[in-house]
Image (cartoon, rainbow, N blue to C red; front, side, top):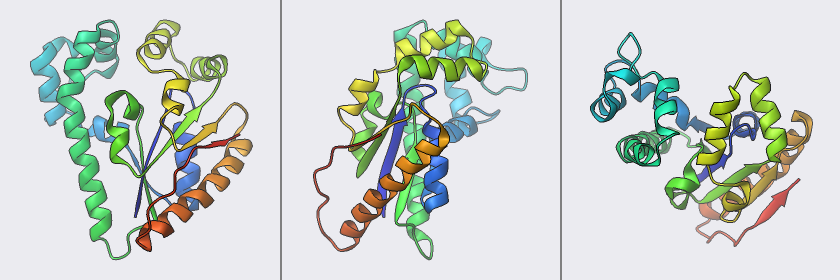
Length: 217
């Protein structure tokens, strides 16, 4: 089973690409869904956030108010790092459990993919067999995010807190430029899928993975 990390900046199209790869046969885990579970009332993530920052970042039901939390940590790099230290190991453990569940299944998938925004920033990309990076011009990504309802100030803060496309792409095995429409992205995904299944076949045969750096337009 090939373990693939998928990452990219805000509004790069990570989730869209993950969805296409799921249609092609990949098992997909969205790390943000795992964070959402941790942040629910009674969750270990909610407790960690409360212990770090107090009840002002909790919603009325006792879960984490993610917008309030983002407003705090995006403006304070030290607070952001404290949050990462508390939450990322919990997410990592959940991801490991997901992989283990796939392995124990009757027929594990050829390709198992985890979508996460901060794989490169946290160094966790090194735990995957392959890293897929989705890029796009900042102007395009900004337009997408604003159309989706992002507040301009919050968008600026998120972009400032994340690495650049070039920094992420520098460590990627496959780099997908998503600057057009979903049809173009689907074509790139089909080519990417060929590479990923070839990689998976090599692992199955006990062969080392080839050195890769492929740019997919």
